[in-house]
Image (cartoon, rainbow, N blue to C red; front, side, top):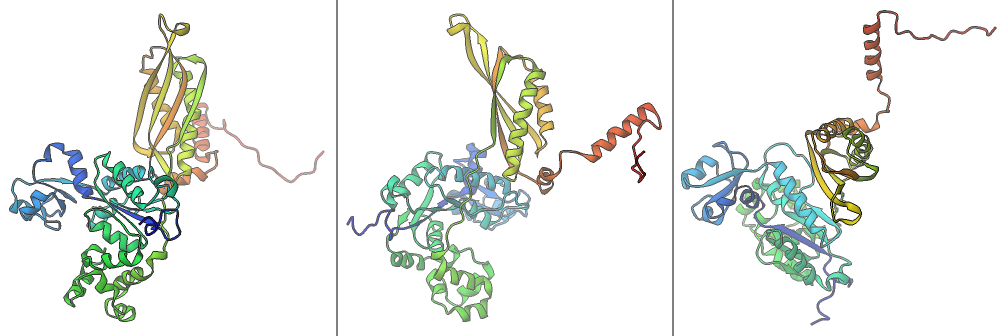
Length: 421
């Protein structure tokens, strides 16, 4: 039995895992409305009567509320239905949260929801993609022993945060994706033939096919993934176009496509000791300004902007009976911006105002600043490549001088070609 099941370190071991978090839309709704857990509830793309139901709890589904209904139709079927709208921003935050959990199990993780900051309302595909991830399972034998150990580890760390998921470990990217999206209990495939046999029995609705193409295929009696895989490639492309033939090609070749892992980007941070310890707001701001510059530059190199900064101040507080008569105490601050920025002067000015209004119980001996990143705009990233000199600021300063002291105050020299005496 042990010989039949190759370990993750073996060459014939399953090398790819797909994680599909169950009902990400309902997870977001229950987090926002915990009192709705015992009530029929659903997630929608917006709250207008023409909005679309994206997902519904089992109780609502039993009453006829299914994804795709308008809010007006859903409430007509179930008047007591609770509906909450979710946005693309919510989905991106959820995907980033699950990504940070999964990198604890495997270093190379590819989220299916790639683009950050998508505009518009969420779609069914975006909702499913927010909870779907691929992991590189190769080379993890030392940690987990076999693929079952990896699957159990992923399920455990997700369950610790209240998330349920289907984890499928195997060989072929599209097939394990379909099996994970189908739900149910996770599984490990040690034989690619067994994996293909199970995936071929799944309904076509599991694949992210265009609904119109899927409808045409089903009218011809093609209802499973295996039916699509058995069609001739040339005839499929001629009759149904590139949309259907793309999945046909992936079913036959996708096992060779490597994952595209997202790099793990730690938030930028900087720290400095204050020598000697000080409690003066202006002097502390001067120390913090260099740290803010550093975290803004580091965040910009990640092609992101700073949405907020967290400041940790370590203080020396006089205390009787303590070692050397002082006791260390930590004060934590958070400064949030209405709009993410890479301008350190804005953050420094806000920090100066916060420190001036703060009554510190002791002198600060150490400062640590951590940036909270957010997607950056193209114009903000362009600021990184500009020279330190600002011609517009120089012209404005010279104009103020001339306005204050009169015409002729600001002059300039012009070079002429002349012989030296």
